[in-house]
Image (cartoon, rainbow, N blue to C red; front, side):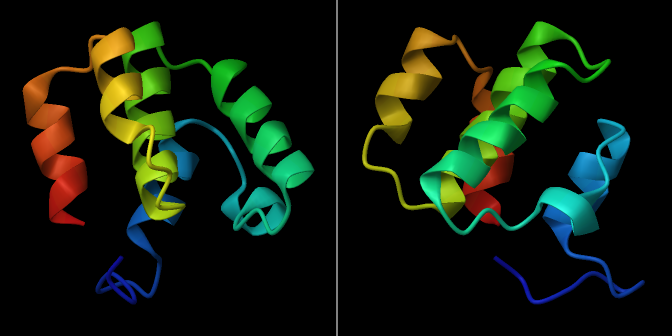
Length: 88
């Protein structure tokens, strides 16, 4: 993950803000329960289902979860989102 964007915010901070989630309050999750709380916040955000899953894909990738390819396939994440996330 890049250290920061030009405005000082991390890429994930910007994504969470788009989802109406305060990144300072919930990110980064340091324990599995905190990750579940972040997942719930994403799933309850005003984003559509595809964007929920794309954001979760990005988070799983950052956690180096080895099930990431299975998640992308099961949730039918569009290839362009996978490529974008892989770039960060």
